[in-house]
Image 1 (cartoon, rainbow, N blue to C red):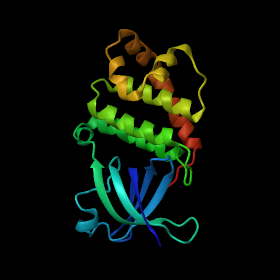
Image 2 (image 1 turned 90 degrees about the horizontal axis):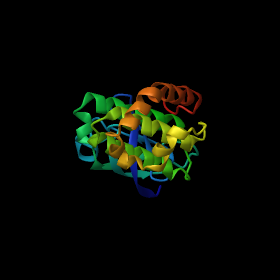
Image 3 (image 1 turned 180 degrees about the vertical axis):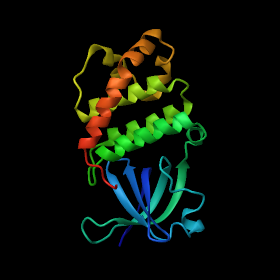
Length: 205
């Protein structure tokens, strides 16, 4: 088996057996990938320091399995970014996990044409780590997410969110009109996102 390397954002981890972990991640091409990290809970050298945590941006070394559809075998992981500012704030962590859940449901194994989904995930996590007004950022993410998925009818109030990069979302936070829009639409748009991901591929349970 040929050893490969790639950068991923970890979406989910599931304990398997006594010491193994199943890791679900999104690659830079937008494809969802599942890895088997054998003895991950025992190996401090390969996977020490809680590196295989959801939300971490990591460089992974792995091997392809010859069986079609089988999980890749994870050999090593190194941390690129851990978004520590998110983990120390409950509200930020809640929003970050909401983002990961959305992406986990819609990303697909083998999809190599969804770079936008990876970029949306990474830029949103960076924005969350710096944001002070999370409701505006959450609405910004939801609008972009639904638009990229092609499941929302564009309304005039959405234009400012669609035109602005989510990494610049903080520029919207102090706008009184944006605050009013957020108060009026966040609940309904979040509900639309929740309903949509229920119909999408959920990947690992």
